[in-house]
Image 1 (cartoon, rainbow, N blue to C red):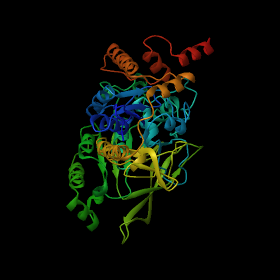
Image 2 (tube, rainbow, N blue to C red; image 1 turned 60 degrees about the vertical axis):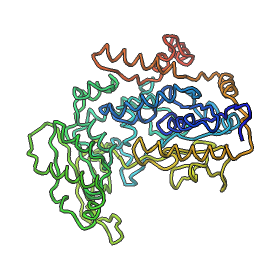
Image 3 (cartoon, one colour; image 1 turned 180 degrees about the vertical axis):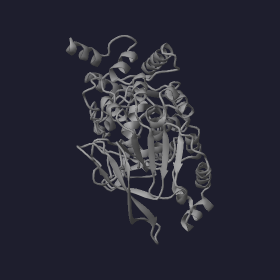
Image 4 (cartoon, helix red, strand yellow; image 1 turned 120 degrees about the vertical axis):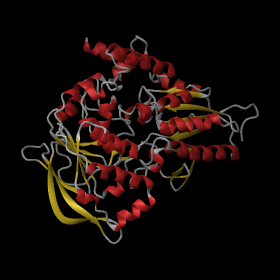
Length: 491
């Protein structure tokens, strides 16, 4: 039940990416149950993968943050940035100071290939490379010699800006394992020139790194055929618009019965195959850079010719068995490569205090209700990738959030507990620990600083990538306590 005075329930949402903000939107748009929503994120900025996962040369998709921002500006919604659940406060403390919690912290690491040589230098996870070119502060530490932050709910390998730049400036041939949109993004950014990316909001130092790139060939590798790709057709077509030669094997497009069956029912797959078949007849121009598409291949090992740096990828040709599973044929080949990017999916990471299923990389739930110790956990809910796995597009999170919020509101309406908490309990706890959350005014100052920097360099925006820069901009010229401490240490 709700209080007769209409006092709101305080709902905490952990994660300010699309899934978390869509949950906040669904909560405050309804009028049946009075709620107040506090959206908490470990980063100084909101928007999650819209800011740090969508390629900078996709401004129309990145502009979704304008819609997300409007939700964070709504009455009844508060944003608390730069607050790490699991470090600044525990999950138990958060639950004790709110009427319900929605976990929306996404998938913080990558899926592994599980092949020999995967840990050689030059073998990196796509999320790491994406975080670099999108300007994520974990991969752009204030001290260039220090690896990325070790934060609850994430699991980065610790590559730094300098290490990634060293890779792309000493690589001729790069192999990207995977045939989804992230793989396309990585291939496109690696093959484009810095001039091609100058009109994006990419950070200046990332552009400088790409300007020194030596990459001339990018190979996309898929273990199934062209009918089984996870590309969206719009993104696939973008490859055909680049000033590169596209190299495909015509034999990959002699489709077997299983592929034909897929194309008969999957419209996107059929469009994708049509696009790629059109490239088979496209004359080679002798362009300086090339993108190669390889199908029916799977990596079986990464090799180093000398030292610890990868030099080639060993592939096995594949086919399908009677059950439709991928099998090796015993025919092997190699692609020279000084950089290998695995883009075979994201995976959720355990956040201390939150139930976690290691077999799926997700929080166990039913319709968004968290399952703890074999039973529903009162007041705990989950949405987004940490709920369903890394599937769908950004808009998929909206439907997912509505399902979770519907369950939450039904539980509140059917329960016997009146609202018990308000935001002061949470903010007083943080203030007592010297934690100073950043709200939307701080974000607006960061936003203005990025636009100002971009305009000064003849660009629409330049992303601030270092945490110290973000905090300084957020404080409108005044030093954030952490920045002040760092400056004092340096003096």
